[in-house]
Structure formats: structure tokens, C-alpha cells
Amino acid sequence: MSYVKPAKSLLFSIIALSALSACTATPTPTNGTAPTTVSQIRLDDYLGRWYEIGRLPMSFQDKCTHNVTATYSLKDNGKINVLNACATKDGMTSVNGEAYATDETNAKLRVSFLPSFLKKLPIGKANYWVLASDQDTSGRYTSALVGTPNHKYLWVLSRTPTLDDATYERYLGIAKQNGYELSKFTKTPQK
Image (cartoon, rainbow, N blue to C red; front, side, top):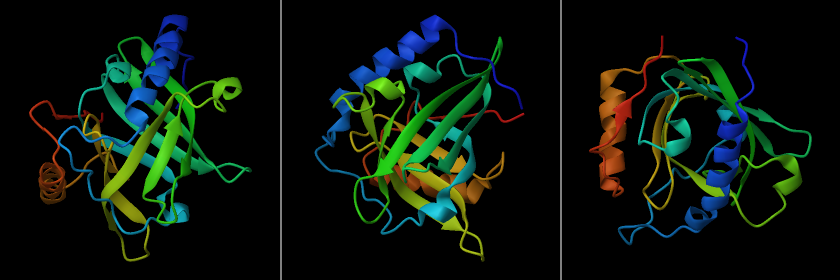
């Protein structure tokens, strides 16, 4: 798969949104209760490509029409490289970010999509919490429910472009139990 570089206006929007995400970086849930994460994530088994099955809308994904993926790989510095990609009406676009675990469970990550020269600033980092996950018999994660502790953003992810209805509905149930408003949650086309 080849990717085109995002347009300058899209890049500017991503940087601006990252700066604004500092407002959401502190885990201040809108309903007063922080969501519950899984007890542990084994990062080695979490790395790799994920397909977005559904999400709550977010402005920097507005141009994504289908084939949304996130690919995680370990960097030499021990942090996680995050490559988000999607198809738009003009082709493919992608953005690179960096994540790191905030506690020993590895279920709570901080992610930044700021350019490398700005990543040391105390802005532009958002929380990414793993709320539920499933594994295959080898222990590799096969699907996950991920959200932000302020309940604004939520994703259902799968290792394959499709996810069975039972798992999808179970994840939505877990999201509701954790206080997420799902009226705007939409499925993501994978073609």
C-alpha cells in the first residue's frame, strides 16, 4: 500500500488538534467516572496492524472515507511508533505518531502526533486506554476496544478488516457500561 503525504492544511489541522488535545490529556471524564481498562496488555502481542471497525467521530478523521488502519511498532527508544492511515476521496493519507505506556499495565498509553521537534513539549498528548480485548490461542490480540478517559473518543479495532457481530455488540455494551455516549458511533467501511 502506498501513502501520499498529507496536504499542508491537513498537517496544520493535525498539529492544531494535537495542541488542543492537551485539554483532553488529563483524565477528566465527562460523566465523573473514568472508564475501566483491561488489567494488562502485553505490548509485544499488541504491536502490528489494526483495522478500525468503528469509531466515535473525530475531526482529524473527517476526510477518511474507508480502509482506516493503525499500525504499531516498537521503536529503538522503547516507545511505540503509531502509523495511522486511511483512504480519502483523493487517495491514501497517513500520519505518524508516538506512544508510550503510562503505567505498568500497558493498558493506558499517551499518544502524540506532533512533529518530533515538538514532542517534548507538555502539550499535544492524548490518552489511549484499552478497555477490552480478545486474544487467539497463541495469546495474540485479535480485537480491542479503545477509548479516551474523557469519553469523547472510542474505537473498535480488529486484526482483520471484519469483526463478528457478537464481539462488536459486546464491545459496544462495555463502552455503554463505561459511560460512552454511542448515538454517533459509526462503522468504518473496510474495502
